[in-house]
Length: 243
Image 1 (cartoon, one colour):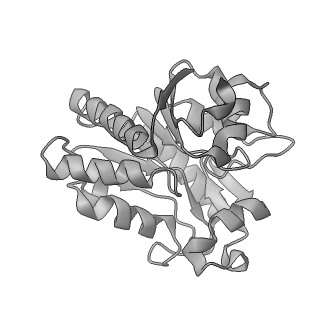
Image 2 (tube, one colour):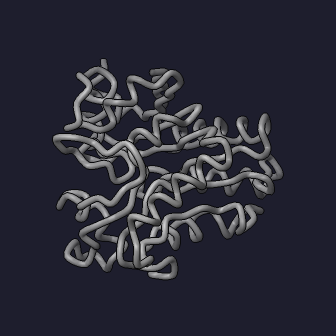
């Protein structure tokens, strides 16, 4: 892993946004894998700023988001599609037809997972997969478990993950769906390059396990150690246990 440590969360997000913008400049039709949650918010804000300044052009970019809650549609206030619209999509010149998203409201969730895998394959795979990391070491909605599913799949969410997402559902963890759809670890690791962001002391323990610990399904992020081109962007607090 190429681990980079910055003084503040803002500096970390700025550096990651610049990394994404460089890829788009080099490959204007790049396929980006995108996360939701608190971790990427500042990076998306920086990408919006860069777009407004004419420093990045999304007109040919294609996007694939990591995950979505099961049982809710894209217009639901708690949906990740709604989150992406608010934080990035509606602020930049990304064509709606270039946005791929898992549909949690479809009646056949397994068929939706298979469709998503086919859509990724159809564009030649993901060029740059942007990731955050959950407090329990999950990536996307690949939760700690005895085994991990390689491809896009249905997943039962852990209570800690539901609590992390409670803000999207009126602050009530009980309102967060119990299931979600997620790219699998195999799909994530097939990306040509991976960039991850983690900020804050709360993430320090799982960051240490991800970078220096053994490969274990109990910390899904640890599998990033096997990737040929993984970059980790940390602020000083998230990197505390690496020194």
